[in-house]
Picture 1 (cartoon, rainbow, N blue to C red):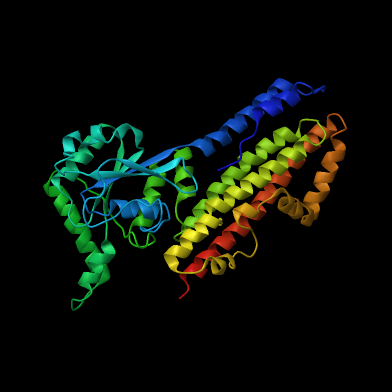
Picture 2 (cartoon, rainbow, N blue to C red):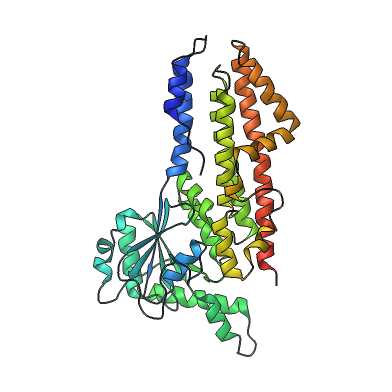
Length: 396
């Protein structure tokens, strides 16, 4: 999520610069911007998914990772308790984000009062407490203990699609009324066992765009700090156009930070340094964009497995960008050459690098404009292609 800049290389070059620039101040600005980018790249997010045995915890872990239940490295699912210890499942593309499949609370092995200590509660950023039918006193006791530890928790009623399917057989079935009855039943159960103001999110593992999951995602975003919010959005499966827009907004904020780093490096009057760094930033960030939006080979294979669409069919929907492993220096150079303005600015920057002061000013501005323009343009293409892939996957 954002390409790291080698501070050692930049400092080494700065030591050889003989100019009127304040070298220490410039080095500090580069370091600060680089540190911010590295924080984004290395931010961890640990999501604990717990509840009664059979509530669908493992299936939700897989859904949040964009995986089918029968894939290699998926969390094990089954009709009986399959999780006997806390097990982390890193996101397949962003391993700093981990979904934790926790044992079922309230079983003989895991009493609610000792539960948090046994699963090492400190490592998790928030908890999702699941129930496939009714929440129990154990769930409330667990929530109370989580609250004491000043952690966030959320009640999720799972398998809503299954409940609706069984009700559809009845005369005068009304989906909206049935959903409200399910919600009220969950609230009543929680209130009876001591939860004063329960808030329930109704979800289905089979389609995260249905019911309350989009509202849950928005709630999580509001509750997390900026860095962890970025990690959450970047790793969410592409289940709607709304999530694609959220990802786009997050990447646009990243572009500003990257362009600022490019600007600072561009101000260093060393011939070729700015161009080399800009090219590295563009290649690495374009790859990251493809990974965030599922335009990489592994993501396409997983999507093909879930939808039954062959990978070549899904890849055919990618018209303007590339899959991540095809983003090379040669590809980025070809994009730069296609942009008349960027090509001219890059050529002028290489020449003016030899002109004191003027070269530094032009280099900084030129690098900022080129990096910003190229990344925004490529991001728009990636979003459009991600929408096309999503539409292709949904075709019958």
